[in-house]
Image 1 (cartoon, rainbow, N blue to C red):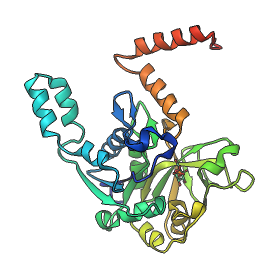
Image 2 (image 1 turned 60 degrees about the vertical axis):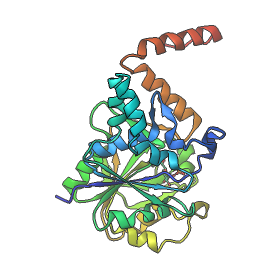
Image 3 (image 1 turned 45 degrees about the vertical axis):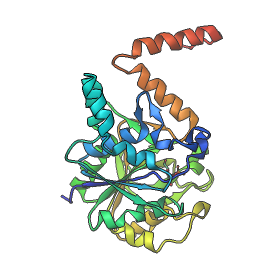
Length: 299
Ligand code: G1P
C-alpha cells in the first residue's frame, strides 16, 4: 500500500481562447453546466477521492476562480435575511470545512508541465493528483479520480487516466503504449504528446486526470520545451516511467471535453436530461426544437 493522495492541483491559467468572447471576462473554468461551474465538478471529484488541499494554478487575470472559492459574507447575509436557506446552503457548501484552497500564480503561460511545477512548494514530497477541469467526467458510481487513487494506493503506482479515441484524433492527446493492458489498467511503457495518427503507438488517449509521485517534479524542472514549444507534462511522465511504475487506467464513466464547443453542449444536454427537476422540461424542449427543425432521431 502506498500513501493516499491528499492534494490536488488544478491548472487553471489557460486563456480559454476557444470560448471568446465569453472568456474575455469569464475564465473557461467558470463556464457552467446547468448551474455549477466546470471547476466545481473537478473539485468535487478531488474531494471525493480524499483530497483536502486544493491547489489552483492561476494567472493574474483569474480573480473569478479565487472569488468563487472565497467566503461571500454579503451574499450569505442577504440570503439569510431573505430566508433563502436552500440557496444559502448551496453557497456555503462550495467547499466543505475540512478542505482548503491554495492559489499559486503561473507568471508565464509555459505549458501544462510548467503549471504543475508551479504547485511544487505546496505539494511537497508526497503523491498528488492533477485534474484538468476541461475534462468533465460523469459516473453514477465512484468518480474517476477516486477509482484511480484507490488503484494507486493499492498498487503503489502512478496513474494516468485513459480512454479509447479514434486513430484520426491521436494528434489532440497524449497517447500511451501499455502492451499488458487488461481492459482496466496496464503499465505504461511509452507516452507521447499529440502524435500524428501514423506515428501513434496506440489509440489509448490521456484524459485530464493524473495521480503522480513527487518524483515528477525533478523531470519537470529539467524539461525542455516540447510540442507547441511548451513544457509538457507528458514529456516529464515519459522520463518518469524510466524509474517509476505508472499505470494507464481506463476509468468507468463518461468524459466530456468541455474545452470544445461540442463537448460543452454535449455535457449540458446529458446533465439536463439526467437532472432531478429539469429533465422533463429538457426532454420536451429538445423534442420541440427537433420537431420544429424537422429533425428525426433514428431509433
Ligand atoms: C492536455 C495534455 C494531453 C491530454 C489532454 C487531455 O492537452 O497535454 O496529453 O491528452 O490534456 O484533455 P490539452 O488538451 O491541454 O492540449
